[in-house]
Length: 395
Image (tube, rainbow, N blue to C red; front, side, top):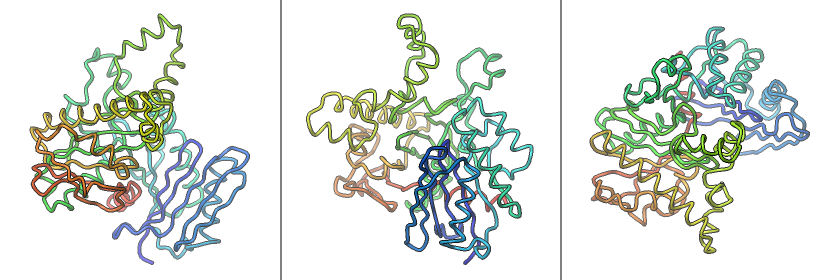
């Protein structure tokens, strides 16, 4: 076995992991620990095409990572012989200070902890995962790869809110973005697919999953992105509002008696597709539309309208558009959403090929016509592979 990187993504109640050969992007083994802290945890470990599934209590992230290492020993591959050169960790929020991966030391750990107010749901489990992994695997370097890094050097005009500048500076209010590893991977892969230098391309990347974000990328550098200080801003998502007049907060507080916590819950967990249709899964929304449900039809229309709006805006920001890529769960698998998102954008030079666009796509593919001035792609994202690549590049 060649050089490998163990990539760990610690969520609030889960641990996702992959053992990757970064040079070829080969996933040697992968797994998932879910329902951490609940009565019955779920563990899945995949190696050489064999899935091992277990149901047992997993008390905390420390216990979860210990079981992961035991599964490597019991099922394979043996980590001692796997050629691990590092452990790469996904960290959601790196603030404006991290523009790339960072070798984990006490200063990096302190920074991740300090940034918890900007990502209160994500940075704490990310931090705990790093701490536990360093205890269990002390003989290899650990690297933090930040979701926000790709957007850390946005142009000031894109990163800055028109807020009192002293307030913004004191409380670190600016656009940080999210899904950066995905946007970076997809924009670089897209250049390879179209056979053109990354440096000469103007790209829009649409990362469409339960969480969704758009980015404008010029010459490989992000110049704008839809998510803001938090992942709430931007596109319509599974349960999040995306863009909304901030005065709605004042209105609900003054006239409906909502507390800040209730509004937070409403905007983040009870809105988006779920708020409009009752379902946050786009597959269920499509089923409701097929049954004639008006709320679901409106949800799909609002979702697509917001996508078209961002594509047009980013074409204006970049002074044109060469490549547009769909990625993530909805972007890769939902041909209806892809078609709806691009309907009416022919004036930008976008011509979708209905036959090429059909179905779920698991490999990079051009879905525009041969005559389309803008090349439209589906590029399956590989965030773990990007984390492994950045980890090795740092070392």
